[in-house]
Image (cartoon, rainbow, N blue to C red):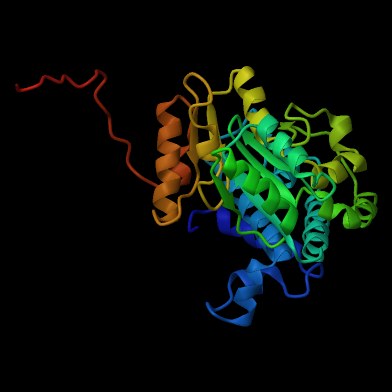
Amino acid sequence: MSLPGFGEVFGEVCGAFDGLLEVPLREVLWAEEGSDAAALIDETVYTQTGLFAFEVALFRLLERCGVRPDYVMGHSVGELAAAYVAGVWSLQDAVRVVAARGRLMQALPAGGVMMSLEASEEQALGWIAGAGVGGSVSLGAVNGPSSVVVSGAEAAVGRVARLARDAGCRTRRLRVSQAFHSPLVEPVLEEFAAVLREVSFSEPGIAVVSNVTGSVADAGELASVEYWVRHAREAVRFGDGVECLVGRGVTEFVEVGPEAVLSGLVQGRGEGVVAFPSVRVGQGELASFVRGLARLHTRGTPVSWPVLRPGRRVALPTYAFNRQRYW
């Protein structure tokens, strides 16, 4: 991203991870394509730390453009970025938590998978119970009324998926290296808790919607070690979070990340509700970013356009264009 402000913050956050990772994050993100260092981005610890750095820098860029949210919400590791920009942690403490989480998740044994189902939470829980595999698989995410993820041991998830397909449900295996938010993460939770006990928490300056409860978290929750341990283990209740925000009158959602993944889960979830991805893969980072800002602007969100680049203001017509069909 070439816009002013993004690169400085991105570099600062990447540098904050120095000493916490075996290979500096900068070297991985700027590695020559096809090199051993470039391949590290597929490892959980570098994927999660890289996402955190990108999301924080993009959030700060949106702030500089005048886009300031009433609420922030993440999806799994995205909630750690949301909590940081809301003021829950200092940068030094935030990167310690994110790096530890990624390192511990990467150390989990192989053999875990995550499967997306076009089904309701109740249907998925029924299939888990019917498969008799409750101890090795659980709900990993509830993304919407008919979009859930089951997560756990490969054989167990496979049995649940077969029951789902027999019932006419479409399934899709996610491209992940571990079964996040499942019973398989439990062996590392105590070590993660030990890291959390060493960091400081502050009251957030922006309301944070919780993945754990699907509602606005209070300061006591976000300052609790137990909350973030539950956050790593329990299902991501993103769909409930969207419902919570729509119920509070939120109609504009901005996805802050390197791809348009979550916007489709939000679009149309309420009357007048729209979701804007900040960046779209294949459409040019700058062009897609400016396009998203323009859509927000037309919806009434104040945007500080001079931040993008110096330019000349042009007066637009003060009336709607007259349109008349020829035929």
